Length: 193
Image 1: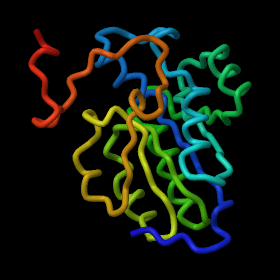
Image 2: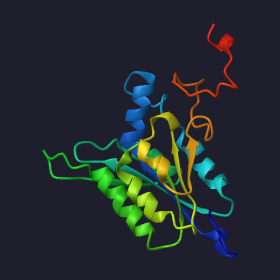
Image 3: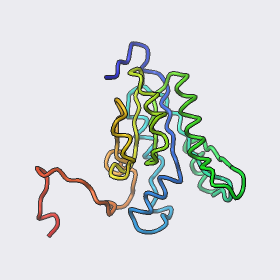
Image 4: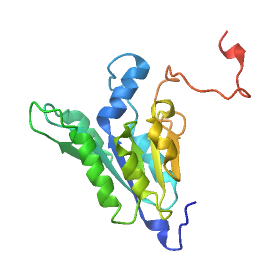
């Protein structure tokens, strides 16, 4: 149970985006490398974050592996709507997950401060960091494609899950071709015929 005391309504909300993970997961859903038209509308993601818990000052960070390539037009577009881009590099020829390491360091630093967290990644490597943040004094959530989230997150206390397509309405085109779980009470065979 989260207990937010008086005066905490104005604390920061850190929006952390694992760009490669979101892009890779989207590619799995649509069956090809996403193009600009396929990708989320990042302004809608920001709007969702701003409206998620009232009174929060959203600090959006987009983490990108810049070891071999930097998509400058995309980076500039993110910056123009208010994202801070974190362009991480690692030694050439190594298998270091620089984005994972960067977000892990960021989550550890946030644990030393007040502030809520909205993480966009399906990667299980952040599970323990979110558990550490689950102290009852802050909101912690993930904005993802729910069916692709790593299983370990289900045991994180007070973790809220939001769907990138359904809750944030971050996509311009019609529904994505996702395999969604459907409650038996809501299942309508006519939808499949």
